Amino acid sequence: MRRESTLAPVWGSIRAEGANVTAEQIRILVVEAHYVVRKGLVGLLEMTAGLVVVGEAANGREAIEQFCTNHPDVTLIDLRIPGRLGVEVIKRIRLESPMARIIVLTTFEDDEDLPCALEAGAQTYLLNGMTADELVATIRAVHAGRLRTVTPDELGSRLHYSTRERSRI
Image (cartoon, rainbow, N blue to C red):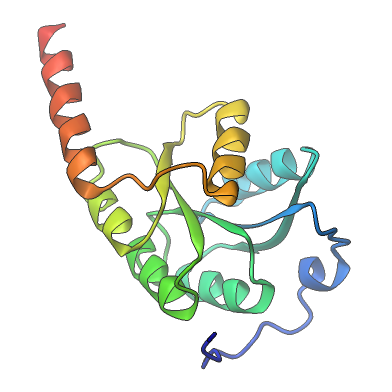
């Protein structure tokens, strides 16, 4: 049973009202503090068949409001957003919707908040240097449930291996 949100909806959202979404499209929320990066992601996703951006947010408060208003299939969230840390937003979204599918965007694989984000309920993460194909493939895999959740322990193993490999260079 879905809990009713205690948050006030964002009325008059152009994307929520104006988006012409079909059943086969994957509905995406983009949460990114940097305007140019957010608009670049939105533009790329909107040009991709089968994907539609139903909301954008620049901070934690907007992210939660947009999630509760638009009920996206997949949420892309940068860990470094103003207002609330990305990890706090992930926890709140998962509280509202335990089955929410979340992909974390981060600059560094050794980001100290990454294990916490995965523990909070994000399915996986992508580094900001990803290709467009990697982004789209990850969104589709997470949406379809084909991508197994990365655990904080697995991330720790990856980081240990990555650090060891870098020290050999």
